[in-house]
Image 1 (cartoon, rainbow, N blue to C red):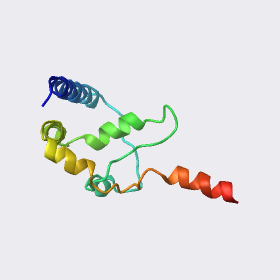
Image 2: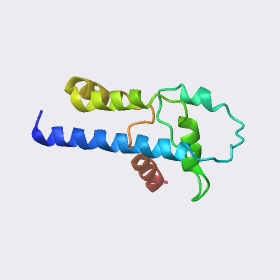
Image 3: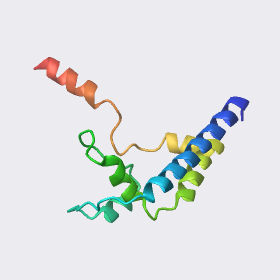
Image 4: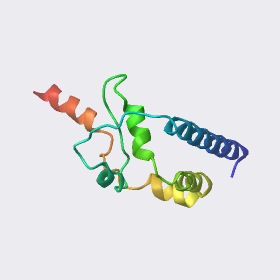
Amino acid sequence: MSTRMIKLNKKMRNILLQQRQERDYLASKTYLKRHVDIHIDDYLKSNLIKVIIGPRRAGKSVFGLQMLQGTNYEKIIGEVSMLLDDEAAYEKMSKAVNPYGDGKACERIVNYLAQI
């Protein structure tokens, strides 16, 4: 592994550790509990990436923190570290089927609309 990759890996680990410290600090504060009609736990069990969307200042960050309470942050760091250190694991991940499509939907829509 190149020196550049080693520095990048160390930087990524530091960012993850800083995020954990920030999460722990923010999680120690008192927030209003949101009423949510859906069962968040069912969504969290999925391996898909979770994205929280909404208008500015709507509480997305706090909601995300509340969702992460009780999660194993060491597992997150371990999984990211594995992708940074193990080239075979990274290669396998990079070739995995993307559940969100191939990234070319906008191009197809524009081409279709141009034909109408």
